[in-house]
Image (cartoon, rainbow, N blue to C red):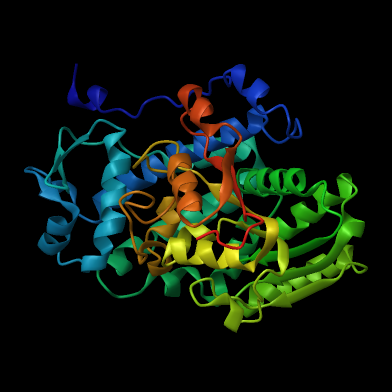
Length: 408
């Protein structure tokens, strides 16, 4: 077999989902966990692998992998910024799945070596395939491409990820990505909303605090889910917080179009600072809610404890999160976020957050328990699901503040 044949890109074939998935997910709307969703996830996962191959080539990393090198040593050899080592390490971990790179860990240092050249990326073909599956995949593919275009200037210190991803020209990319027409994103909103509604069904009144609301897509689904279960009349207060003024105004405008009669309020809350100095009184809320917010908390246990203190007795913290199926498993969305300091510059913990980014179900359960929550739970049953489908990234985590006051 010739080298060209040996390293040809594998054919992208879509396989039907395991029938057991439908049974584990039967409590959600049938249209949510559809074959179209699974196909979209598989396509975007493969797209991120080909993007990683392309980036490794553009960054001239391949020539440095004739011997074992860590991401930090590679950054030194290529005169990259030291903080870029996290993003570079992610790219290398992504390429391990192709078989072209091998890895080893010695004394907590992860090193990499080239086994054979990677295949030639097929980005245009994969993009067309993804849009055939669902035209709603365009925002994710667009944002992946935008992030990929920034890796070289970020590596060289010419630009930060924040500058390249949050300028005026990229706002539309984020609005399209964090939108409920984007099936691979909105699934997080639905899973979190369903769990919140389940936990609050018996409460006679509802006072809600939402964290990091963005442009309002999570709140939109939460209120839709509450409406379906007859819970809207019980809402006495709903404080929607978002530190970014543009997104906050956008979310306010959109939600007020649909829910003018609800007691909705808006504010800015930094989850990394004391909440009671920012207008969130202790013991005030029955639900603290957020989707894809708390995994970027600078100090996770601090922010979880602040959420616990904001809850009334027996109140619930419910979060929708992108959940990592297995420790250190790459997830396509991380290609976007790895170049953001807000994603990587966090305090780690060997038990609950050994690395920046998304957490596993076990890590979330341990974090909630250590922060003083009872009844910590992750739904759906991602521990069983991952055994038959390793790219299931959606989960909702909940924990309850105990009725007694001496939780700590």
